[in-house]
Length: 74
Image (cartoon, rainbow, N blue to C red; front, top):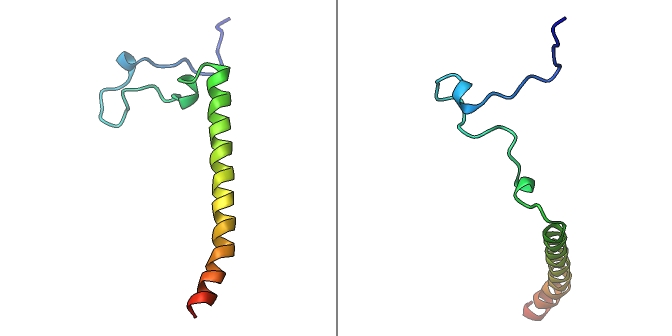
Protein backbone atom coordinates (compact mmCIF):
# COMPACT_ATOMS: atom_id res chain seq x y z
CA UNK A 1 0.00 0.00 0.00
CA UNK A 2 1.33 3.44 -0.93
CA UNK A 3 1.64 5.98 1.86
CA UNK A 4 -0.06 9.28 1.01
CA UNK A 5 0.68 12.22 3.26
CA UNK A 6 -1.99 14.80 3.99
CA UNK A 7 0.72 17.45 3.96
CA UNK A 8 2.38 17.81 0.55
CA UNK A 9 6.15 17.71 0.42
CA UNK A 10 7.91 21.04 0.08
CA UNK A 11 9.23 21.88 -3.34
CA UNK A 12 12.76 23.10 -3.68
CA UNK A 13 13.67 26.02 -5.91
CA UNK A 14 15.00 23.63 -8.54
CA UNK A 15 11.66 21.79 -8.84
CA UNK A 16 9.45 24.86 -9.08
CA UNK A 17 8.08 25.76 -12.51
CA UNK A 18 10.11 28.27 -14.49
CA UNK A 19 7.91 31.35 -14.45
CA UNK A 20 8.15 34.80 -12.93
CA UNK A 21 5.24 34.30 -10.53
CA UNK A 22 7.12 32.03 -8.16
CA UNK A 23 9.36 33.70 -5.56
CA UNK A 24 12.92 32.46 -5.17
CA UNK A 25 12.60 32.21 -1.37
CA UNK A 26 10.48 29.65 0.49
CA UNK A 27 6.97 30.72 1.45
CA UNK A 28 7.17 30.09 5.18
CA UNK A 29 9.78 32.64 6.20
CA UNK A 30 9.25 34.40 9.50
CA UNK A 31 11.18 37.05 11.39
CA UNK A 32 10.91 34.79 14.44
CA UNK A 33 13.29 32.33 12.75
CA UNK A 34 16.00 34.98 12.97
CA UNK A 35 15.45 35.57 16.69
CA UNK A 36 16.54 32.36 18.34
CA UNK A 37 17.41 33.41 21.86
CA UNK A 38 14.90 33.80 24.70
CA UNK A 39 16.85 36.79 26.05
CA UNK A 40 16.55 38.58 22.71
CA UNK A 41 12.79 38.02 22.65
CA UNK A 42 12.47 39.26 26.24
CA UNK A 43 14.57 42.33 25.38
CA UNK A 44 12.38 43.06 22.35
CA UNK A 45 9.21 42.79 24.48
CA UNK A 46 10.75 44.98 27.20
CA UNK A 47 11.63 47.72 24.70
CA UNK A 48 8.14 47.57 23.17
CA UNK A 49 6.56 47.90 26.61
CA UNK A 50 8.76 50.91 27.45
CA UNK A 51 7.83 52.56 24.15
CA UNK A 52 4.14 51.96 24.91
CA UNK A 53 4.48 53.54 28.35
CA UNK A 54 6.30 56.57 26.92
CA UNK A 55 3.58 56.98 24.29
CA UNK A 56 0.87 56.78 26.95
CA UNK A 57 2.57 59.45 29.08
CA UNK A 58 3.04 61.73 26.05
CA UNK A 59 -0.62 61.36 25.10
CA UNK A 60 -1.73 62.15 28.68
CA UNK A 61 0.45 65.26 28.80
CA UNK A 62 -0.86 66.35 25.41
CA UNK A 63 -4.48 65.86 26.41
CA UNK A 64 -3.92 67.95 29.55
CA UNK A 65 -1.75 70.65 27.95
CA UNK A 66 -3.68 71.36 24.75
CA UNK A 67 -6.84 72.67 26.46
CA UNK A 68 -4.70 74.84 28.76
CA UNK A 69 -2.81 76.19 25.76
CA UNK A 70 -6.11 76.92 24.01
CA UNK A 71 -7.44 78.79 27.06
CA UNK A 72 -4.25 80.84 27.41
CA UNK A 73 -4.27 81.88 23.75
CA UNK A 74 -8.00 82.58 23.52
